[in-house]
Image (cartoon, rainbow, N blue to C red):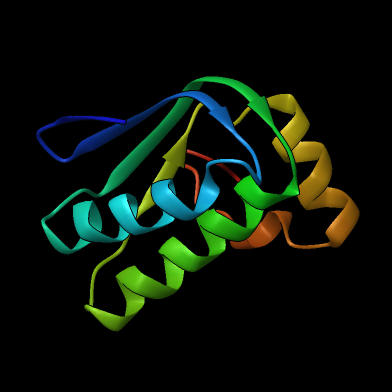
Length: 96
């Protein structure tokens, strides 16, 4: 995870093996002003990534902030569609 202004870039795998640590680190970054999460460099994922993003949305809402997700991996979009929650993921410039 790397921060650049209000942009937070996720890098590498996001799976059950490491999601707990990333979840907490991301929550702190959101509290500290991260507003866009770039997922373009996620190399491996499972459904835990979707759960983490939904938790981050709740975190932002609790702090009266809005976040958006950029460069969603195709696998994540597929999982979100299968679960019927793809409309819950705010994407900059998306038309839903």
